[in-house]
Length: 291
Ligand code: A2P
Image 1 (cartoon, rainbow, N blue to C red):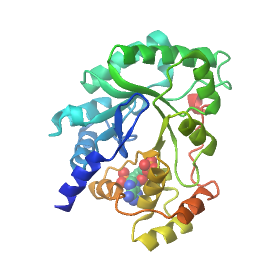
Image 2: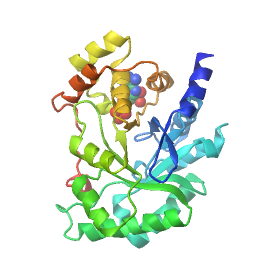
Image 3: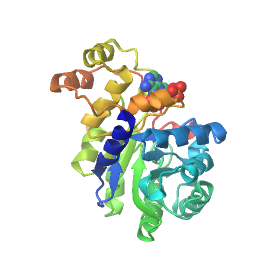
Image 4: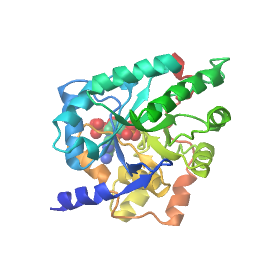
């Protein structure tokens, strides 16, 4: 009964993107979900638990499992908000359009809700980084115009990449998906996005478990009778950031959705905001192409 009520509640919690499209306030991340029966099962379970935003990427090499799970789920396609991302090797105008066709075919879908540039080309790696990003963005805008995607955005863009894109195009990204968890909140990027109406999504909102034993988070969690994972997710939500936790375990998938029945106080938010750097991945636009 509680689970049913939660599902109905979840469906009603969403945010509005800058083109009017609505997006759920929490999503299910699929990085490391395998492209096989276990991956299909994980995404099916996530949908069953109540997740409506599913986040994948060409780089995760699991688009076909994600697509199968969506097709096999009892929830209709229109209720699912599916994100995928163009891989670094496919940056550029023509190659982005081709990559999109491959993604759509692997997913077995005829449209994508949100298409993101996975990582910006950066000045440290490419002298023509502005041109590369602007050509990729031009292809994304075309896909939006053609109605093949409902919204377009970027991922891992810092203020300098967003500024360069804004110099070349009037289309403001709907979303910037960045690494975001206690101990790594990238405040300048967060502020830059929120000032210009770009919704921020948080990847690795649990710091890939690296922040879960933090004493401050444990203390705050105990005060609310919640887990540290739930505190991380609630903190993101109260920053208007959409967290994308991932888990292959149903019990954790459910736990990670149970974050709408408590609030962190302003003092608790401020304490978490001021945590020293903790649990960051070390991945940046300047080093990602060598990974
Ligand atoms: P598992 O898939 O075994 O459940 P992030 O989303 O920050 O990248 O973190 C993902 C990692 O966190 C995975 O290893 C996942 O493990 C684990 N995880 C997900 N939810 C929880 C939770 N509620 N409590 C503890 N660990 C979790």
